[in-house]
Image (cartoon, rainbow over the protein chains, first blue to last red):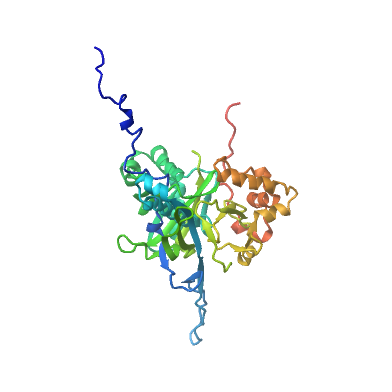
Length: 298
Length: 144
Protein backbone atom coordinates (compact mmCIF):
# COMPACT_ATOMS: atom_id res chain seq x y z
CA UNK A 1 0.00 0.00 0.00
CA UNK A 2 1.35 3.39 -0.88
CA UNK A 3 2.23 5.90 1.80
CA UNK A 4 -0.41 8.57 2.09
CA UNK A 5 0.77 12.15 1.76
CA UNK A 6 0.16 14.43 4.75
CA UNK A 7 1.84 15.89 7.84
CA UNK A 8 4.52 13.61 9.15
CA UNK A 9 7.67 13.81 11.21
CA UNK A 10 9.51 14.04 7.95
CA UNK A 11 7.55 16.73 6.21
CA UNK A 12 7.17 18.89 9.31
CA UNK A 13 10.41 18.01 11.02
CA UNK A 14 11.04 21.65 11.85
CA UNK A 15 8.33 21.42 14.44
CA UNK A 16 9.99 18.61 16.32
CA UNK A 17 12.94 18.83 18.70
CA UNK A 18 15.87 16.83 17.43
CA UNK A 19 16.14 15.35 20.91
CA UNK A 20 14.51 15.81 24.26
CA UNK A 21 16.00 15.73 27.73
CA UNK A 22 14.47 13.83 30.62
CA UNK A 23 13.79 15.92 33.73
CA UNK A 24 16.58 14.43 35.83
CA UNK A 25 20.35 13.99 35.78
CA UNK A 26 22.02 10.73 36.69
CA UNK A 27 24.59 11.27 39.40
CA UNK A 28 28.33 11.01 38.82
CA UNK A 29 30.07 7.76 39.78
CA UNK A 30 30.63 8.03 43.49
CA UNK A 31 30.62 5.72 46.51
CA UNK A 32 27.90 6.17 49.09
CA UNK A 33 29.46 8.33 51.82
CA UNK A 34 29.60 6.49 55.14
CA UNK A 35 31.55 8.92 57.29
CA UNK A 36 28.36 10.34 58.79
CA UNK A 37 27.69 6.93 60.35
CA UNK A 38 31.26 6.32 61.49
CA UNK A 39 33.01 9.52 62.54
CA UNK A 40 32.09 11.66 65.50
CA UNK A 41 31.68 15.22 64.34
CA UNK A 42 33.16 17.87 66.59
CA UNK A 43 31.84 21.41 66.39
CA UNK A 44 34.96 23.57 66.06
CA UNK A 45 33.08 26.61 64.75
CA UNK A 46 34.05 28.62 67.84
CA UNK A 47 37.39 26.94 68.52
CA UNK A 48 39.49 29.98 67.68
CA UNK A 49 42.31 27.82 66.29
CA UNK A 50 43.04 25.69 63.27
CA UNK A 51 44.05 22.81 65.50
CA UNK A 52 41.65 21.01 67.81
CA UNK A 53 42.91 18.60 70.47
CA UNK A 54 41.13 15.48 71.71
CA UNK A 55 42.46 14.27 75.08
CA UNK A 56 42.17 10.75 76.41
CA UNK A 57 43.32 9.02 79.56
CA UNK A 58 46.26 6.70 79.18
CA UNK A 59 46.12 3.14 80.51
CA UNK A 60 46.20 2.94 84.28
CA UNK A 61 49.79 3.21 85.57
CA UNK A 62 51.69 0.20 86.81
CA UNK A 63 52.57 0.26 90.46
CA UNK A 64 54.11 -1.96 93.10
CA UNK A 65 52.89 -3.71 96.16
CA UNK A 66 53.89 -2.29 99.50
CA UNK A 67 54.02 -4.06 102.77
CA UNK A 68 51.77 -3.52 105.74
CA UNK A 69 52.59 -0.29 107.50
CA UNK A 70 54.32 1.19 104.49
CA UNK A 71 52.75 4.04 102.59
CA UNK A 72 50.81 3.60 99.35
CA UNK A 73 52.87 4.37 96.27
CA UNK A 74 51.78 7.55 94.53
CA UNK A 75 51.58 7.29 90.74
CA UNK A 76 50.95 9.59 87.83
CA UNK A 77 47.70 9.36 85.90
CA UNK A 78 48.45 10.80 82.49
CA UNK A 79 46.63 11.89 79.38
CA UNK A 80 47.52 11.91 75.71
CA UNK A 81 45.99 13.96 72.96
CA UNK A 82 45.23 13.66 69.29
CA UNK A 83 45.18 16.75 67.14
CA UNK A 84 42.82 17.59 64.32
CA UNK A 85 44.14 20.16 61.85
CA UNK A 86 41.67 22.03 59.69
CA UNK A 87 41.82 22.27 55.93
CA UNK A 88 39.52 24.05 53.53
CA UNK A 89 38.27 21.51 51.02
CA UNK A 90 36.98 23.45 48.05
CA UNK A 91 35.72 23.22 44.52
CA UNK A 92 35.04 26.23 42.34
CA UNK A 93 33.21 26.70 39.06
CA UNK A 94 31.43 29.43 37.13
CA UNK A 95 27.72 28.76 36.75
CA UNK A 96 26.99 30.52 33.48
CA UNK A 97 23.87 32.56 32.79
CA UNK A 98 23.54 30.76 29.47
CA UNK A 99 23.54 27.38 31.21
CA UNK A 100 20.85 28.41 33.66
CA UNK A 101 18.69 30.02 30.98
CA UNK A 102 18.99 27.34 28.32
CA UNK A 103 19.05 24.22 30.45
CA UNK A 104 15.93 25.07 32.38
CA UNK A 105 17.81 23.63 35.33
CA UNK A 106 18.38 25.88 38.25
CA UNK A 107 21.97 26.69 39.08
CA UNK A 108 21.46 24.76 42.29
CA UNK A 109 21.43 21.51 40.33
CA UNK A 110 25.05 22.09 39.47
CA UNK A 111 25.87 23.38 42.95
CA UNK A 112 24.46 20.17 44.45
CA UNK A 113 26.98 18.29 42.35
CA UNK A 114 29.81 20.47 43.66
CA UNK A 115 28.66 19.75 47.23
CA UNK A 116 28.51 16.01 46.52
CA UNK A 117 32.13 16.21 45.42
CA UNK A 118 33.13 17.84 48.71
CA UNK A 119 31.14 15.24 50.66
CA UNK A 120 32.92 12.46 48.79
CA UNK A 121 36.30 14.02 49.52
CA UNK A 122 35.50 14.14 53.24
CA UNK A 123 34.53 10.46 53.08
CA UNK A 124 37.85 9.59 51.43
CA UNK A 125 39.73 11.62 54.03
CA UNK A 126 38.05 9.86 56.93
CA UNK A 127 38.60 6.35 55.55
CA UNK A 128 42.26 7.18 54.88
CA UNK A 129 42.74 7.21 58.67
CA UNK A 130 42.87 3.39 58.77
CA UNK A 131 46.16 3.42 56.88
CA UNK A 132 48.24 5.07 59.60
CA UNK A 133 46.57 3.50 62.62
CA UNK A 134 49.03 2.38 65.27
CA UNK A 135 47.38 -1.02 65.35
CA UNK A 136 47.31 -2.78 61.98
CA UNK A 137 46.87 -6.36 60.82
CA UNK A 138 49.00 -6.32 57.71
CA UNK A 139 48.18 -9.03 55.16
CA UNK A 140 49.93 -7.33 52.26
CA UNK A 141 49.85 -9.58 49.21
CA UNK A 142 47.37 -11.99 50.81
CA UNK A 143 43.66 -12.19 50.04
CA UNK A 144 41.45 -11.68 53.07
CA UNK A 145 39.86 -14.76 54.61
CA UNK A 146 37.36 -15.06 57.41
CA UNK A 147 40.12 -16.60 59.53
CA UNK A 148 42.36 -13.57 59.00
CA UNK A 149 39.41 -11.26 59.61
CA UNK A 150 38.55 -13.06 62.85
CA UNK A 151 42.17 -12.93 63.99
CA UNK A 152 42.21 -9.20 63.43
CA UNK A 153 38.85 -8.82 65.18
CA UNK A 154 40.21 -10.62 68.24
CA UNK A 155 43.18 -8.26 68.32
CA UNK A 156 40.79 -5.33 67.97
CA UNK A 157 38.80 -6.55 70.96
CA UNK A 158 42.09 -6.91 72.84
CA UNK A 159 42.61 -3.19 72.39
CA UNK A 160 39.58 -2.74 74.70
CA UNK A 161 37.94 -0.31 72.33
CA UNK A 162 34.53 -0.12 74.02
CA UNK A 163 31.35 0.71 72.17
CA UNK A 164 30.16 -1.03 69.02
CA UNK A 165 32.68 -2.48 66.60
CA UNK A 166 32.28 -1.70 62.90
CA UNK A 167 34.29 -3.09 60.01
CA UNK A 168 34.84 -1.07 56.87
CA UNK A 169 36.10 -3.04 53.92
CA UNK A 170 36.86 -2.27 50.31
CA UNK A 171 34.95 -3.95 47.51
CA UNK A 172 37.83 -6.44 47.21
CA UNK A 173 37.89 -7.17 50.93
CA UNK A 174 34.15 -7.90 51.04
CA UNK A 175 34.54 -9.97 47.88
CA UNK A 176 37.11 -12.10 49.67
CA UNK A 177 34.95 -12.49 52.78
CA UNK A 178 32.00 -13.59 50.63
CA UNK A 179 34.17 -15.91 48.58
CA UNK A 180 35.55 -17.50 51.74
CA UNK A 181 32.03 -18.06 53.05
CA UNK A 182 31.28 -20.03 49.90
CA UNK A 183 34.57 -21.85 49.43
CA UNK A 184 36.03 -22.34 52.84
CA UNK A 185 33.47 -21.95 55.53
CA UNK A 186 30.55 -23.48 53.69
CA UNK A 187 26.96 -22.83 52.84
CA UNK A 188 25.89 -22.94 56.47
CA UNK A 189 27.55 -19.55 56.90
CA UNK A 190 25.63 -18.10 54.00
CA UNK A 191 22.34 -19.37 55.38
CA UNK A 192 23.23 -18.66 58.98
CA UNK A 193 25.58 -16.20 60.61
CA UNK A 194 26.72 -14.68 57.34
CA UNK A 195 23.26 -14.40 55.85
CA UNK A 196 22.79 -10.71 56.58
CA UNK A 197 25.84 -9.46 54.80
CA UNK A 198 25.96 -12.19 52.15
CA UNK A 199 22.40 -11.62 51.03
CA UNK A 200 22.38 -7.85 51.43
CA UNK A 201 21.07 -6.14 48.33
CA UNK A 202 22.93 -2.98 49.26
CA UNK A 203 25.64 -2.26 46.75
CA UNK A 204 27.80 -0.34 49.18
CA UNK A 205 27.47 1.38 52.52
CA UNK A 206 26.01 -0.55 55.45
CA UNK A 207 25.57 -4.26 54.72
CA UNK A 208 24.49 -5.69 58.06
CA UNK A 209 26.05 -7.51 60.99
CA UNK A 210 28.41 -10.48 61.09
CA UNK A 211 29.70 -11.92 64.35
CA UNK A 212 28.39 -8.89 66.17
CA UNK A 213 30.29 -6.50 63.93
CA UNK A 214 28.57 -3.90 61.77
CA UNK A 215 29.88 -4.37 58.25
CA UNK A 216 30.32 -1.48 55.81
CA UNK A 217 31.59 -1.67 52.25
CA UNK A 218 32.96 1.26 50.31
CA UNK A 219 34.92 1.94 47.16
CA UNK A 220 36.37 4.92 49.04
CA UNK A 221 38.43 2.63 51.29
CA UNK A 222 42.06 3.65 50.86
CA UNK A 223 44.59 1.82 48.76
CA UNK A 224 47.95 1.32 50.41
CA UNK A 225 49.59 0.75 47.05
CA UNK A 226 48.70 -0.52 43.62
CA UNK A 227 47.56 -3.94 44.81
CA UNK A 228 46.58 -3.68 48.48
CA UNK A 229 43.63 -2.08 50.23
CA UNK A 230 43.53 -0.90 53.81
CA UNK A 231 40.17 -1.00 55.55
CA UNK A 232 39.73 -1.87 59.17
CA UNK A 233 37.84 -2.02 62.41
CA UNK A 234 36.44 0.99 64.20
CA UNK A 235 34.65 1.31 67.54
CA UNK A 236 31.83 3.79 67.86
CA UNK A 237 29.18 4.75 70.37
CA UNK A 238 26.03 5.45 68.42
CA UNK A 239 24.23 8.73 68.84
CA UNK A 240 20.54 9.41 68.39
CA UNK A 241 19.00 7.97 65.22
CA UNK A 242 20.07 10.04 62.25
CA UNK A 243 22.94 11.71 64.03
CA UNK A 244 26.65 10.97 63.96
CA UNK A 245 28.23 8.82 66.71
CA UNK A 246 28.79 10.48 70.07
CA UNK A 247 32.14 8.70 70.37
CA UNK A 248 34.23 7.13 67.67
CA UNK A 249 37.81 6.23 66.88
CA UNK A 250 37.48 8.61 63.94
CA UNK A 251 37.05 12.31 64.61
CA UNK A 252 35.86 14.81 62.04
CA UNK A 253 36.46 18.34 63.21
CA UNK A 254 34.02 20.73 61.56
CA UNK A 255 35.00 24.38 61.56
CA UNK A 256 32.46 25.03 58.81
CA UNK A 257 30.12 22.54 57.18
CA UNK A 258 29.62 22.20 53.45
CA UNK A 259 28.54 25.62 52.16
CA UNK A 260 28.12 27.19 48.75
CA UNK A 261 29.02 30.82 48.21
CA UNK A 262 28.56 32.66 44.94
CA UNK A 263 29.65 35.99 43.55
CA UNK A 264 27.84 37.30 40.51
CA UNK A 265 30.40 38.39 37.94
CA UNK A 266 28.67 40.45 35.21
CA UNK A 267 31.77 40.51 33.05
CA UNK A 268 31.65 36.72 32.86
CA UNK A 269 27.86 36.39 32.85
CA UNK A 270 27.61 33.93 35.64
CA UNK A 271 27.96 33.17 39.30
CA UNK A 272 31.50 32.35 40.37
CA UNK A 273 30.62 29.59 42.81
CA UNK A 274 32.77 27.95 45.44
CA UNK A 275 31.55 25.07 47.56
CA UNK A 276 33.75 24.28 50.51
CA UNK A 277 33.98 22.79 53.96
CA UNK A 278 36.55 23.59 56.60
CA UNK A 279 37.19 20.25 58.26
CA UNK A 280 39.94 18.08 59.68
CA UNK A 281 40.46 14.38 60.31
CA UNK A 282 42.14 12.39 63.06
CA UNK A 283 41.96 9.15 64.94
CA UNK A 284 40.55 10.17 68.31
CA UNK A 285 42.12 7.21 70.08
CA UNK A 286 44.33 4.46 68.69
CA UNK A 287 42.71 1.77 70.81
CA UNK A 288 39.43 2.33 68.98
CA UNK A 289 40.86 1.71 65.51
CA UNK A 290 42.58 -1.23 63.81
CA UNK A 291 43.68 -1.17 60.19
CA UNK A 292 43.40 -4.29 58.04
CA UNK A 293 45.54 -4.56 54.91
CA UNK A 294 44.84 -7.19 52.27
CA UNK A 295 45.39 -7.87 48.60
CA UNK A 296 43.00 -6.32 46.11
CA UNK A 297 43.33 -8.63 43.12
CA UNK A 298 41.34 -11.86 43.30
CA UNK B 1 52.65 21.02 62.65
CA UNK B 2 51.79 23.79 60.26
CA UNK B 3 49.80 26.65 61.70
CA UNK B 4 48.53 27.66 58.31
CA UNK B 5 45.10 26.73 57.08
CA UNK B 6 45.62 25.48 53.54
CA UNK B 7 43.07 25.22 50.80
CA UNK B 8 42.73 21.99 48.89
CA UNK B 9 40.91 21.53 45.62
CA UNK B 10 38.65 18.56 46.13
CA UNK B 11 39.52 17.04 42.78
CA UNK B 12 43.28 17.38 43.21
CA UNK B 13 45.23 14.18 43.67
CA UNK B 14 46.70 13.99 47.17
CA UNK B 15 50.43 14.15 47.68
CA UNK B 16 51.76 10.70 48.57
CA UNK B 17 54.44 10.52 51.25
CA UNK B 18 55.83 6.97 51.54
CA UNK B 19 56.95 6.05 55.07
CA UNK B 20 58.84 2.91 56.07
CA UNK B 21 57.70 1.22 59.28
CA UNK B 22 60.33 0.62 61.97
CA UNK B 23 62.22 -2.65 62.48
CA UNK B 24 60.06 -5.13 64.32
CA UNK B 25 60.13 -8.77 65.29
CA UNK B 26 56.69 -8.91 63.67
CA UNK B 27 57.68 -9.62 60.06
CA UNK B 28 54.23 -8.62 58.82
CA UNK B 29 54.96 -5.04 59.87
CA UNK B 30 58.75 -4.69 59.85
CA UNK B 31 59.83 -2.36 57.05
CA UNK B 32 56.44 -2.18 55.39
CA UNK B 33 55.73 0.96 53.42
CA UNK B 34 52.70 3.12 54.11
CA UNK B 35 51.92 5.49 51.27
CA UNK B 36 50.34 8.32 53.23
CA UNK B 37 47.98 10.57 51.29
CA UNK B 38 48.27 14.20 52.33
CA UNK B 39 45.57 16.67 51.37
CA UNK B 40 46.91 20.03 52.49
CA UNK B 41 47.45 18.98 56.08
CA UNK B 42 48.65 15.81 57.70
CA UNK B 43 45.87 13.75 59.26
CA UNK B 44 48.02 10.76 60.14
CA UNK B 45 49.85 12.34 63.06
CA UNK B 46 53.08 11.00 61.53
CA UNK B 47 54.19 14.00 59.49
CA UNK B 48 54.96 17.67 59.89
CA UNK B 49 55.49 20.48 57.42
CA UNK B 50 59.23 20.66 56.71
CA UNK B 51 58.99 24.36 55.88
CA UNK B 52 60.18 23.78 52.32
CA UNK B 53 56.95 22.63 50.75
CA UNK B 54 57.45 19.03 51.73
CA UNK B 55 56.78 16.75 54.64
CA UNK B 56 59.03 15.34 57.31
CA UNK B 57 58.43 12.80 60.03
CA UNK B 58 57.67 14.13 63.47
CA UNK B 59 60.47 13.72 66.00
CA UNK B 60 58.36 11.22 67.91
CA UNK B 61 58.00 8.98 64.85
CA UNK B 62 61.70 9.27 64.00
CA UNK B 63 62.60 8.16 67.50
CA UNK B 64 60.45 5.07 67.03
CA UNK B 65 62.41 4.14 63.91
CA UNK B 66 60.06 5.33 61.21
CA UNK B 67 61.82 6.48 58.05
CA UNK B 68 60.85 8.44 54.96
CA UNK B 69 61.30 6.21 51.92
CA UNK B 70 62.89 9.15 50.15
CA UNK B 71 65.58 9.32 52.86
CA UNK B 72 66.11 5.57 52.62
CA UNK B 73 66.80 5.93 48.90
CA UNK B 74 69.12 8.88 49.49
CA UNK B 75 71.39 6.68 51.62
CA UNK B 76 71.05 3.68 49.29
CA UNK B 77 73.47 2.46 46.63
CA UNK B 78 70.65 2.69 44.05
CA UNK B 79 69.29 6.23 44.68
CA UNK B 80 67.93 6.43 41.14
CA UNK B 81 65.17 4.01 42.15
CA UNK B 82 63.49 6.84 44.07
CA UNK B 83 62.57 8.36 40.73
CA UNK B 84 61.11 5.00 39.71
CA UNK B 85 59.07 4.89 42.92
CA UNK B 86 57.72 8.37 42.17
CA UNK B 87 56.72 7.19 38.69
CA UNK B 88 55.10 4.18 40.31
CA UNK B 89 53.03 6.46 42.58
CA UNK B 90 51.81 8.41 39.55
CA UNK B 91 50.86 5.25 37.70
CA UNK B 92 49.12 3.83 40.76
CA UNK B 93 47.16 7.04 41.36
CA UNK B 94 46.04 7.18 37.75
CA UNK B 95 45.06 3.51 37.73
CA UNK B 96 47.77 2.46 35.28
CA UNK B 97 49.04 -0.29 37.54
CA UNK B 98 47.44 -2.73 39.94
CA UNK B 99 50.70 -4.15 41.20
CA UNK B 100 53.02 -3.43 44.08
CA UNK B 101 56.39 -1.79 43.54
CA UNK B 102 59.02 -4.46 42.73
CA UNK B 103 60.80 -5.64 45.86
CA UNK B 104 64.21 -5.72 44.27
CA UNK B 105 64.03 -1.98 43.57
CA UNK B 106 63.43 -1.06 47.21
CA UNK B 107 66.30 0.36 49.28
CA UNK B 108 68.52 -2.14 51.01
CA UNK B 109 67.49 -0.95 54.50
CA UNK B 110 63.83 -1.56 53.67
CA UNK B 111 64.53 -5.06 52.37
CA UNK B 112 66.57 -5.87 55.45
CA UNK B 113 63.77 -4.76 57.71
CA UNK B 114 61.25 -6.80 55.73
CA UNK B 115 63.48 -9.88 55.85
CA UNK B 116 63.87 -9.57 59.59
CA UNK B 117 67.53 -8.57 59.44
CA UNK B 118 67.14 -6.09 62.23
CA UNK B 119 69.32 -4.61 64.92
CA UNK B 120 69.87 -6.49 68.14
CA UNK B 121 67.63 -4.20 70.17
CA UNK B 122 64.68 -5.31 68.09
CA UNK B 123 65.65 -8.97 67.97
CA UNK B 124 65.22 -10.28 71.50
CA UNK B 125 64.67 -14.03 71.18
CA UNK B 126 61.31 -13.92 72.91
CA UNK B 127 60.07 -11.46 70.32
CA UNK B 128 61.25 -13.35 67.25
CA UNK B 129 58.76 -15.39 65.23
CA UNK B 130 58.25 -18.90 66.49
CA UNK B 131 59.83 -21.71 64.53
CA UNK B 132 57.52 -24.05 62.67
CA UNK B 133 56.16 -26.81 64.89
CA UNK B 134 57.53 -30.28 64.32
CA UNK B 135 56.15 -33.69 65.23
CA UNK B 136 59.60 -35.04 65.77
CA UNK B 137 59.01 -37.81 63.24
CA UNK B 138 61.44 -38.23 60.39
CA UNK B 139 59.60 -37.72 57.15
CA UNK B 140 60.71 -39.21 53.91
CA UNK B 141 59.99 -37.93 50.46
CA UNK B 142 57.26 -39.65 48.53
CA UNK B 143 58.06 -41.80 45.56
CA UNK B 144 61.46 -43.22 44.87
